[in-house]
Amino acid sequence: MEKLLKAKLKLKKVRGKLEELDLEIDNIQDFIDELSGQKYSLEEEMESKEREENELLKFIRDYTINNLDKDISEKYGKNSFEEKLLKATLFTAKNGFKPAFNHVYVSKDYIYSIDGYRALQYKHNNSNIVKNMFVEVDNLLEEKIDLSLFKEVDGEHETCGLDIARKVINKEIEKVDNDIFNIDKDYFMNEFLYKEADGKFYKLLIFDFKNMKIAVNKEFIEDALNIFKDSKFNVSYSGATNPMIFSNDEIKLLVLPVRYSDIDKI
Image (cartoon, rainbow, N blue to C red; front, top):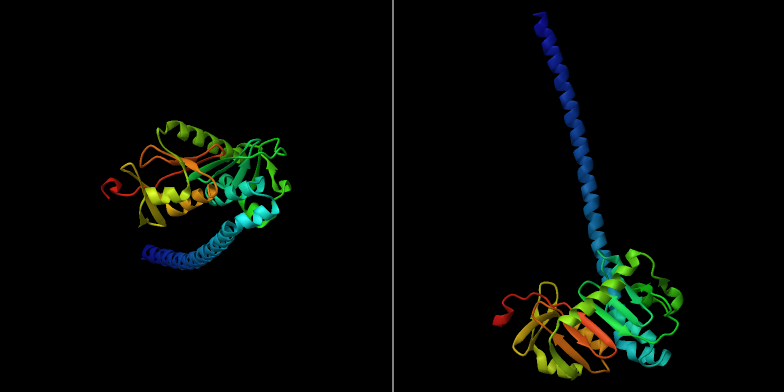
């Protein structure tokens, strides 16, 4: 009997301890739920702020595009180093996963811009550039252009955008074997635009080059044609999954296409 009483007492203590642990678990779960709620609220706030930032950057970008010719020509002169910098800046989308791409890169002879979807090499004649340098896109958009904004390229993080842009452009241009020569943007759009289509996240333009169709982000094409606004260019292509390349003696520019289902059947 004594053993039974002891066993029951021990069982009671164990049950009591289990109840305490269950209560502690409930408290911990309540804390976890509270943290999850805070995390969700912060994520929503972050998404809202990112949308606001993107809208602001788009406003700045659109304003700059619309006023680029007038403002820059009056301030620095037509076809100036500053104009080329701004055009390269507008050609670079912000990339949160690859922060080194959020820059315009300048070597002694060229301005480079790359964002993972497109790349630009722009020849310049600024004799003050004696070493590889870079500047953050936001600084160029928000402040007066000044070489004091530029930093010397130093280290793998900073140089990767410059090196990748240079290598990608040179490699892709060597691969193409089909060319359209010496056209302007109006001829390009009137002659080769097949149709506009809705992509998953953005508008697409589908082009038809000699019965070969290519789908490209509409904004990317508009940015590319803005670079060649006052000059003629060549177009090179080698397939629906390979970059479209625009070039002349001063500029080399490539844009990656978008995969579009059954593009050959449309």
